[in-house]
Amino acid sequence: MNIIVCIKQVPETTEVRINPETNTLMREGVKSIINPFDMYAIEEALRLKERFGGKVSVITMGPPQADAALREAISMGADEGYLVCDRAFAGSDTWATSYTLAGAIQKLKPFDLIICGKQASDGDTAQVGPGISTHLNIPQVTYVKKVEEATDKSMRLERMLEEGYEIIQAPLPALLTVVKEINEPRIPSLKGLMRAKNAKIITFTQKELDLDPQQIGLCGSPTQVVKIFTPTPRVGGQMLKGEVPDIVRELVELIKGEVN
Image (cartoon, rainbow, N blue to C red; front, top):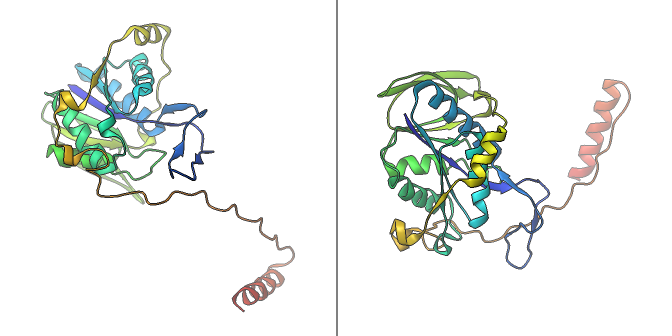
């Protein structure tokens, strides 16, 4: 089973600052990590490889330093790392990103399965995975919490819902987005760390992918970020004490005061 895992490098901290002039994230001095949800995608790909054999390829789109995320995935057990990197891809929204990644994945054919984390911690849109499946015209199953069965033609999956789960039989090739309930990511071994250090990361630029210039980067992004700002911190609330009837009366008076 040949599996492709799409990952993203994101800021480690939630204390992200915004540049007031450019309305972009200020990443200087902030450590970057693999998007936490993508760690579960890597782990599930490795478990499927251990069960059925094959190969795990990991791909990410980002600046040159994103190769560190690929090397971490290789240290966990992935076989190959691919970096999609070009100034032409800068400013991509989720649609342009999924189009670009789909173009890169076409270079890695044949594949049986694509796995993504359910969403990125810095964007929280959950759109890139489904977008890739749309561009590749393959089935998608989102919020997968368990792979029950798999053959070379299909997979039986548990998909998490708000109140329970549903069983889906999906033909292959397909794309899955997984939730954290699916597994527990492994810790890289010393051997894996050494292999990752010497691994060759293959870079795809716009020249290699030859994508439509009108569908990549800012030009290919139908959504534009007009403004990003840090919300004003909330002032601490008031703690009401006493018996429940007294608290209710006091709360009602406070609400009336705010309304008036």
